[in-house]
Length: 130
Image 1 (tube, rainbow, N blue to C red):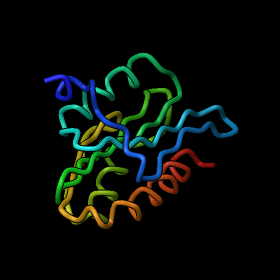
Image 2 (cartoon, rainbow, N blue to C red):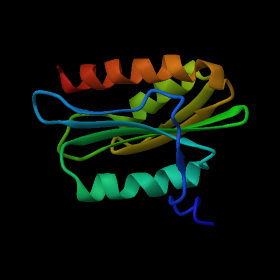
Image 3 (cartoon, rainbow, N blue to C red):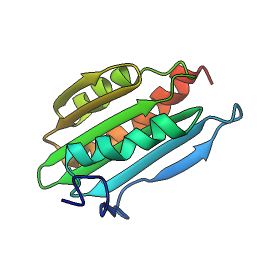
Image 4 (cartoon, rainbow, N blue to C red):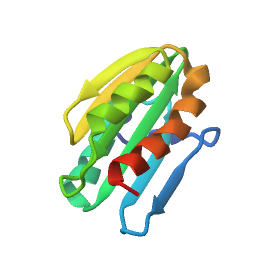
Protein backbone atom coordinates (compact mmCIF):
# COMPACT_ATOMS: atom_id res chain seq x y z
CA UNK A 1 0.00 0.00 0.00
CA UNK A 2 2.73 2.47 0.94
CA UNK A 3 4.54 1.85 -2.35
CA UNK A 4 1.35 2.51 -4.32
CA UNK A 5 1.13 5.89 -2.62
CA UNK A 6 4.67 6.67 -3.71
CA UNK A 7 6.32 6.05 -0.37
CA UNK A 8 8.66 3.23 0.50
CA UNK A 9 10.10 2.92 -3.00
CA UNK A 10 13.68 1.76 -2.92
CA UNK A 11 16.03 4.01 -4.87
CA UNK A 12 17.96 1.94 -7.37
CA UNK A 13 21.69 2.12 -6.87
CA UNK A 14 22.33 0.16 -10.06
CA UNK A 15 20.99 2.68 -12.53
CA UNK A 16 22.09 6.13 -13.61
CA UNK A 17 20.62 8.65 -11.20
CA UNK A 18 21.21 12.32 -11.73
CA UNK A 19 20.01 15.61 -10.39
CA UNK A 20 21.47 18.78 -11.84
CA UNK A 21 20.83 22.31 -12.96
CA UNK A 22 21.75 23.75 -16.31
CA UNK A 23 22.90 27.32 -16.85
CA UNK A 24 19.29 28.51 -17.04
CA UNK A 25 18.67 27.04 -13.57
CA UNK A 26 16.47 24.26 -14.88
CA UNK A 27 16.20 21.45 -12.36
CA UNK A 28 16.56 18.06 -14.10
CA UNK A 29 15.84 14.90 -12.09
CA UNK A 30 16.52 11.40 -13.38
CA UNK A 31 15.51 8.94 -10.65
CA UNK A 32 15.03 5.18 -10.49
CA UNK A 33 12.97 3.09 -8.08
CA UNK A 34 13.18 -0.69 -7.70
CA UNK A 35 9.90 -2.48 -7.99
CA UNK A 36 7.70 0.63 -7.93
CA UNK A 37 4.43 0.23 -9.84
CA UNK A 38 3.48 2.81 -12.48
CA UNK A 39 0.92 4.33 -10.11
CA UNK A 40 3.66 5.02 -7.56
CA UNK A 41 5.71 6.88 -10.17
CA UNK A 42 2.73 9.11 -10.90
CA UNK A 43 2.20 9.79 -7.20
CA UNK A 44 5.88 10.63 -6.81
CA UNK A 45 5.72 13.04 -9.74
CA UNK A 46 2.71 15.04 -8.52
CA UNK A 47 4.64 17.13 -5.94
CA UNK A 48 7.39 17.80 -8.49
CA UNK A 49 4.93 19.30 -10.96
CA UNK A 50 2.92 21.20 -8.36
CA UNK A 51 5.53 22.42 -5.88
CA UNK A 52 8.55 23.19 -8.03
CA UNK A 53 9.33 25.64 -10.80
CA UNK A 54 11.53 25.08 -13.84
CA UNK A 55 11.74 21.31 -13.30
CA UNK A 56 11.92 18.33 -15.63
CA UNK A 57 11.81 14.85 -14.10
CA UNK A 58 12.16 11.40 -15.61
CA UNK A 59 11.24 8.61 -13.21
CA UNK A 60 11.62 4.93 -13.95
CA UNK A 61 11.12 1.55 -12.33
CA UNK A 62 12.26 -1.91 -13.25
CA UNK A 63 10.26 -4.87 -12.00
CA UNK A 64 11.09 -8.27 -13.44
CA UNK A 65 10.84 -8.08 -17.21
CA UNK A 66 8.85 -4.82 -17.17
CA UNK A 67 9.96 -1.20 -17.19
CA UNK A 68 7.73 1.71 -16.15
CA UNK A 69 8.59 5.23 -17.29
CA UNK A 70 7.24 8.65 -16.39
CA UNK A 71 8.28 12.12 -17.49
CA UNK A 72 6.93 15.39 -16.17
CA UNK A 73 7.72 19.04 -16.68
CA UNK A 74 6.52 22.22 -15.06
CA UNK A 75 4.40 24.56 -17.15
CA UNK A 76 7.08 27.27 -17.25
CA UNK A 77 9.29 25.13 -19.53
CA UNK A 78 9.02 24.37 -23.20
CA UNK A 79 9.51 20.62 -22.68
CA UNK A 80 7.11 17.98 -23.98
CA UNK A 81 6.98 15.06 -21.53
CA UNK A 82 4.84 13.09 -23.99
CA UNK A 83 7.55 13.13 -26.64
CA UNK A 84 10.23 12.13 -24.13
CA UNK A 85 8.26 9.10 -22.90
CA UNK A 86 7.23 8.08 -26.40
CA UNK A 87 10.86 7.97 -27.57
CA UNK A 88 12.21 6.34 -24.38
CA UNK A 89 9.47 3.68 -24.51
CA UNK A 90 10.52 2.69 -28.02
CA UNK A 91 14.03 1.95 -26.75
CA UNK A 92 12.67 -0.52 -24.16
CA UNK A 93 10.33 -2.11 -26.74
CA UNK A 94 7.17 -0.54 -25.42
CA UNK A 95 4.77 2.31 -25.88
CA UNK A 96 3.93 5.50 -24.09
CA UNK A 97 2.68 9.02 -24.34
CA UNK A 98 0.59 11.60 -22.63
CA UNK A 99 0.30 15.30 -22.07
CA UNK A 100 2.99 17.92 -22.41
CA UNK A 101 3.28 18.23 -18.61
CA UNK A 102 3.09 14.50 -17.70
CA UNK A 103 3.34 11.25 -19.62
CA UNK A 104 3.73 7.55 -18.82
CA UNK A 105 4.94 4.52 -20.69
CA UNK A 106 6.67 1.24 -20.33
CA UNK A 107 8.34 -1.63 -22.07
CA UNK A 108 9.38 -5.25 -21.91
CA UNK A 109 13.16 -4.98 -22.37
CA UNK A 110 14.76 -3.70 -19.16
CA UNK A 111 18.16 -4.59 -20.59
CA UNK A 112 17.78 -1.51 -22.84
CA UNK A 113 16.96 0.83 -19.96
CA UNK A 114 20.48 2.27 -19.63
CA UNK A 115 20.45 3.28 -23.29
CA UNK A 116 17.03 4.91 -22.89
CA UNK A 117 18.18 6.87 -19.83
CA UNK A 118 21.23 8.23 -21.62
CA UNK A 119 19.01 9.33 -24.49
CA UNK A 120 16.56 11.10 -22.16
CA UNK A 121 19.22 13.62 -21.09
CA UNK A 122 19.88 14.45 -24.75
CA UNK A 123 16.18 14.87 -25.54
CA UNK A 124 15.64 17.14 -22.54
CA UNK A 125 18.66 19.26 -23.48
CA UNK A 126 17.40 19.46 -27.06
CA UNK A 127 13.90 20.51 -25.99
CA UNK A 128 15.32 23.20 -23.72
CA UNK A 129 17.34 24.53 -26.64
CA UNK A 130 20.58 24.20 -24.71
